[in-house]
Image 1: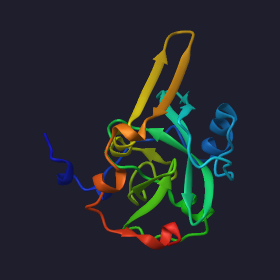
Image 2: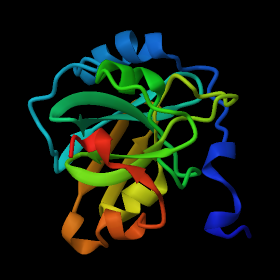
Image 3: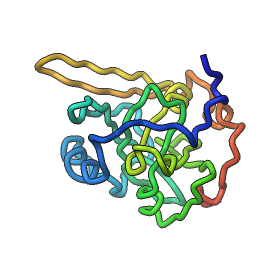
Image 4: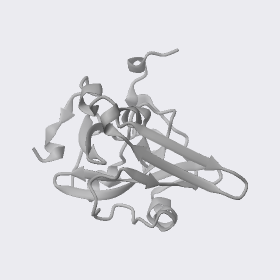
Length: 182
């Protein structure tokens, strides 16, 4: 088994051929009843409902992302195979921020400080966002997925008090404090 630090996050890849930015803006936004990259009225949600998308049954949720005093609705693929959380360039551009590809970034994800990265340049998921296990564990996430022939349900419940502080878990990363507007 690989140690957590032995596989660099900038080499991670996720074969996502069935979901693109256009799908996030159109089909996924309509199904979730939340417009992708729209201004969010909420900075933190304790419970959210998601959806199953496409032939590969992608689990997708929408969470508030806060950067430089603005909060937007961002749709994520929930990937239990990814340790790290990735946010695509389009999201940063919507906040009018240019981020160098080689660094990590600190944002508020569902009102919890967390470290994210851009998807690697040559990966198969450059225009989508991935919610990784490190964030879900640190935020005390209870992920519930129900799949039957007639019914699909995805729910996330957050209990931050039961787990470590995210910044402690991710303290080994160099972050750009300018992203938070500090």
